[in-house]
Image 1 (tube, rainbow, N blue to C red):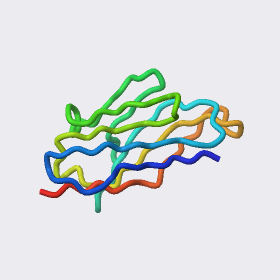
Image 2 (cartoon, rainbow, N blue to C red; image 1 turned 90 degrees about the horizontal axis):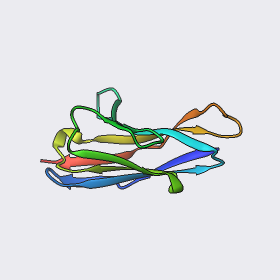
Image 3 (tube, helix red, strand yellow; image 1 turned 45 degrees about the horizontal axis):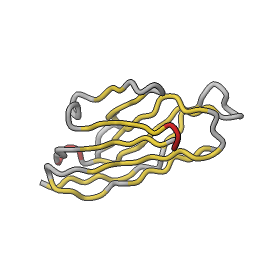
Image 4 (spheres, helix red, strand yellow; image 1 turned 30 degrees about the vertical axis):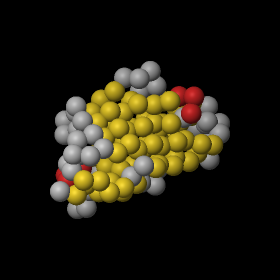
Length: 121
């Protein structure tokens, strides 16, 4: 069984910064793509940023230039550095990873439980 555990959410004023972390644990062969999604109240879940196993990144237009995704493959961890935060960034942030395991050798998409980020104006 694989678990993704997020940390680093909280309350911050507009213009501030937060760093989210998400660590994968369990019987893991490899981790392919990793990413962050968010869901605000009354809205659909949306992709924030993604990173491939070799470090290629992509971002939603709304966070480009303000957020940075990175990963530490030795620690099975993905990070999201969020700068210049805006009230519209308020949401529950979820990490996701495509993980290969003995039971899922072709990869399975796992999700974290979510962490709340609230940006006050």
